[in-house]
Amino acid sequence: MDYFALLVDFATPAYDQTVGLRNKILKIPLNVEFDLEEIQNEYKDFHLACYDENAQLIACLVLTPLTDKIIKMRQVAVDVDFQKQGVGAYLVEISEAIASKKGFTKMELNARDTVIPFYQKLKYKKIGKQFTEVGIKHFKMYKKLVQG
Ligand SMILES: CC(C)(COP(=O)(O)OP(=O)(O)OC[C@H]1O[C@@H](n2cnc3c(N)ncnc32)[C@H](O)[C@@H]1OP(=O)(O)O)[C@@H](O)C(=O)NCCC(=O)NCCS
Image 1 (cartoon, rainbow, N blue to C red):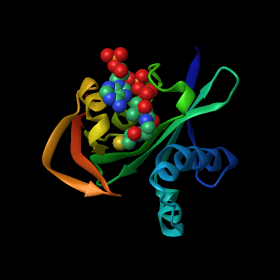
Image 2 (cartoon, protein in one colour; image 1 turned 30 degrees about the vertical axis):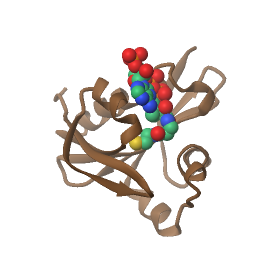
Image 3 (tube, rainbow, N blue to C red; image 1 turned 90 degrees about the vertical axis):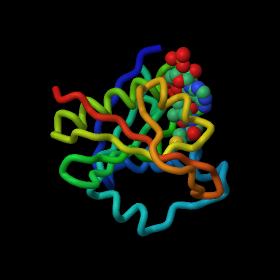
């Protein structure tokens, strides 16, 4: 399968599609909803979308700058039929390259405990104590970005 990633602009149809995919993969299974404030604050984030060869959206994630050096990866979602085929790893690696090019030196994220092995394979390290968010156990993880 061929796929490619693009940064999409906030409040465009492409962005709206990513919100739909995040809702399907991350929110609905937990019976939680987006709140308006969460979406309104995303104008300052970077939105990365991944498409297959038919230009169908298959995955997305959000990058939120925390400081001028630290950026947070959030809402990593791969559509059900496309999971475990390398798409998530591809998207994370692309987002690291984008963040590094923009001058960020550290990527942070809050990982659900079930997907910690996914991030560990991508060289993320756990830091701090386990915590609970949306009823799920999480660990904070981070990775120093190679400057390119
Ligand atoms: C978690 C998720 C982003 C991973 O993306 P993916 O495209 O399915 O994963 P990849 O195919 O790129 O996997 C890369 C490697 O991580 C492993 N991996 C992926 N998900 C895993 C999991 N849940 N547990 C253990 N290993 C996992 C893969 O087996 C693969 O290993 P390999 O390199 O040895 O073959 C995706 O499955 C997903 O969207 N899941 C539902 C939503 C979710 O949990 N998001 C993360 C919230 S923190």
